Length: 95
Image (tube, rainbow, N blue to C red; front, top):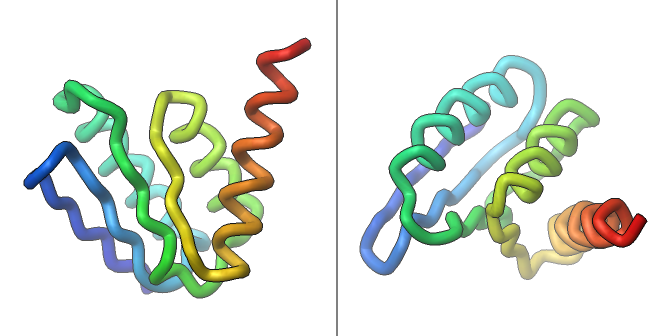
């Protein structure tokens, strides 16, 4: 199960809670496509509530990051995922 909560108080922020796997990846992608069209500033993706991310989930986060999303995490596991995606994005741009 994945919970997706969107707030727009100071810019758009998306809080994810649960497992980013299987059909939940498609649900996040649908939500992302709607949000990025309407957002005027970068969208913050809060990963602190995520307990597991599969390969498809990481691919979705990579796409979101490439589209301008800011991945935020303070837990060790999710910080490692966010750093991996951010570093891969920088390496790809520097080619």
